[in-house]
Length: 63
Image (cartoon, rainbow, N blue to C red; front, side, top):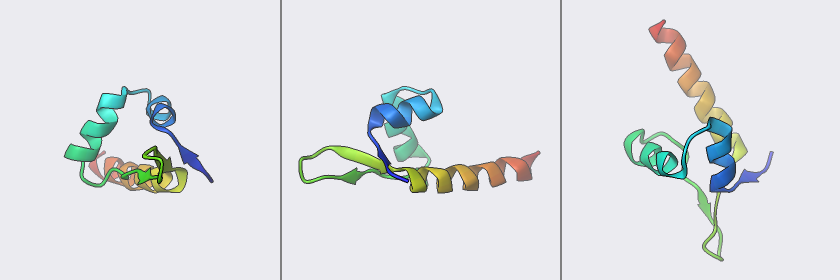
């Protein structure tokens, strides 16, 4: 599936970069990025899709 930089993750959810780090801090189950040897961070698209599925199920349970 591939990997996304922080700009790609922000665009996927229409949020700011700051919000991504807040989600990682506050929502504990938001995927953490893979840190490359160069220090760049990338999120696995498969991890994001899995997180979306878990949250969709939770939202459906509340409805």
